[in-house]
Image (tube, rainbow, N blue to C red; front, side):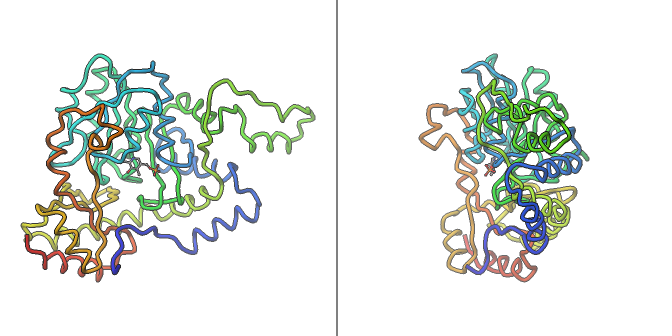
Length: 376
Ligand SMILES: *Cc1c(COP(=O)(O)O)cnc(C)c1O
């Protein structure tokens, strides 16, 4: 392949940061995770954050924070990565699939109102490709319906809507640091909130339910405390092995330093794509990219004869992807099928094109020239 679809931007800074964890010979859950959580909270502007090993884990734990009774319903967009809806199933809740907005591909506010019923307890908006769901309107609606809001911010790290960071609008925000996302820790995730009380139990559930992690016990042991019981801990609730570790956090700390730069570079690349495609009627941008304070994860276009276009790109060594097949088309989610006509028709036209900070201007020109060669 001449041009990859996604590529993490990693180098010397990350290596040096990992070296610090090696020097301390502490690789598991420790001080580096704490430092990353603190810097992340400061960066997005929230009270506290809990580092986990994926955004899938983050979504699972975030929903569990509310202890909803089994069998209640959670509204999720039908066109998203499976983790958004699988987190609902993990919590023994029922996903209610909501159609997407034709222009933003985010959750449709009109369809939310249609799909809502008295058994709904929460909604999980996804900022599709990094494009913000109008959170002012969504939050107002959710409050009026007494719903909790968990933001799936996996597609956006560092993006803002009306000057306020995505992932800080809802009760809880979940981020992904998987290698293809806006910034990476290899695999990894974060749960952030303005409410530390909401996060407190999640700190235990990411560590098998233990109320004191190894690092805290180590610190107690190292302190002047003469008591012998620093080994003591209790488990009151079921937990999971979902913690972030100091190796991941080391990469995260270096990536966070670069995040704004990477997001600005993504904006410049998107600008180059959008300008190049202005006259092209066969290949149109699928999302209204607003290139300010943004954190776009993917460049998604609409093409009528999608599969032929994908082959055309592949023959010229440009990687493409499809995000996403509506979830109700998967056997797992078929029992929860609902009417989502917009997603079911639009997804057949969607193609994701290469976007990552290290993509060069020449590579973007090359991708554009290959696109212009395509005749629908
Ligand atoms: C990638 C992704 C996730 C899951 O992230 P992981 O860190 O890979 O678990 C969740 N939701 C959406 C919308 C995603 O794209």
